[in-house]
Image 1: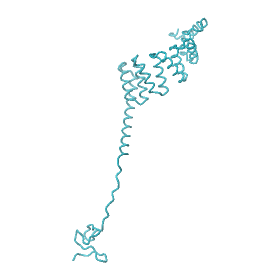
Image 2: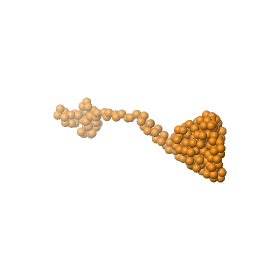
Image 3: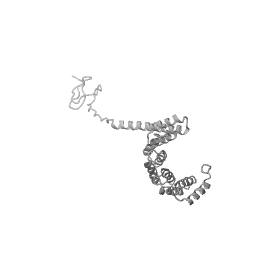
Image 4: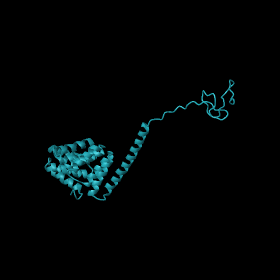
Length: 239
């Protein structure tokens, strides 16, 4: 019934089973999954709570609860649910993946990347590689993101999503390079020594006859030989 989309009929079946055996963990877990598909997230969380009362270490219920809590924007409790599942089973790929998606939505991109890497050690998926690339882009690691997109495309050639995300990362890398070059130029200008003004030497008068510059102590013009001046300050010819 679940795969046929007959969710209401399926719920009725689980309710009958739980009337007969109220602590049947599998029925509670499956009912929670069906309620989740119907968008009834709070009721789904309550069902997973019933599972965990009977089986506190049930990793599937913990993971499913985390997914439903994320839908309710209860990110803190969702993260705790995923962490509990991973604590019980360290290689639980679903919980690591959901944890990474949640952390990325929370803006905790470096932590999300760590979670995706844990998934990739066991499941080399082009989708997970692409998701990791988007987290690297958001974290400003554009070269790392491009590498992740390339690895994704190697597994799934010409995948439009990975191609588009790679183009975004490449554009951001170019922008970052241009901004870095501009900052370097500004720093170089800031460090460049400022030229100090050079004092111009004080000049003397000019010879009234030939225009040659006269030294302050000169008695005769070096250009035409004219004696500089008599006591009245007039220029006189030599001899």
